[in-house]
Image (cartoon, rainbow, N blue to C red; front, top):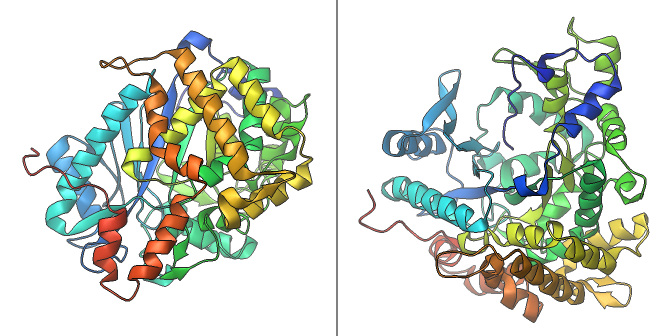
Length: 465
């Protein structure tokens, strides 16, 4: 997750006097359609070339060494805690670390996916250039396939030292989520309260279909998990107070206040004062606001930080974040953004997409989503399979991108970014199923070499600077 940094002045610094300030926080995110942008967050797994195991954070072949190499060669500014490099920044971009050393690029908010492709290509070139002499490879999977939880070193971020023990109190799989999983997420703008909740309703409703299209996490701890998106399943047993589908978004009358009320009831992890994270685990934010804690008074910035520690399928900040997809190989990393842009930035397409899933009551939605984690495109949603709905959704998204007609230098629309997932949607075979088939064929051979050949990122050209 990207780290939220509060402004020292302005609305974020204001003590909370009323709920209206929290609603206004979301209202400040509204933009006119000509200002709409799209951002993508890309997580990847770093592994040892010889063993396929997760590399440690520390050491000469660890994640920190990769970050230092990026800073030395490509102009990134190191971000440190207690003398350790735990992230990087430069104008327009940020690289952060998930708790198990998963490396995440938080991409710029861009007008077109053609710009995002340029940024992603540059990032892949940079990280593979630095990793190559270290014997480090990156995997385009949604979960660490070989290393067990206790074999993965924690990234020494202060916030993770607070989160990790709390996770064990509220669910069985929270630490797996933190250390083993990887995702791709897309961030979108909204023009009004009604538009924000409509986009949340549609995207949350589509969660089973989107999850199946990007299911890519069938092997963990060196064996099949019984799921095609084990990453998705892990979220069902992480923390029920901050994860999953939000029932209120399916009400036509839902608004920002409903999201504020849900967030106020959710337990906190921490607040940040200066460079220190202060443990407030388990305290509902509403209690912190109204009663205080540890001699502190809640600010709007504290609330914004709290929002970044909530993990529903679709999350609201001052933009909308879709969180239901497993991480992908580089060639299909932008497909989620293309799917979302084609549907949610085109009114008719958003309505058509909603028509696919609007009839399901909430309990049935949850059941279908959980079934999809295991069965992918084969999961049934009444008289349809999720694969049937995925093919219709794919066509709707393609039409939306064609209408938007944002072209590259070759005259191609952003529909080109859906092309890498076209075959899996047409065939009804997920990436996870393909991986599982190959894994079962090669598990007794040189597993590490096969794993990297099959799921590894392409290496940087030998003439990289």
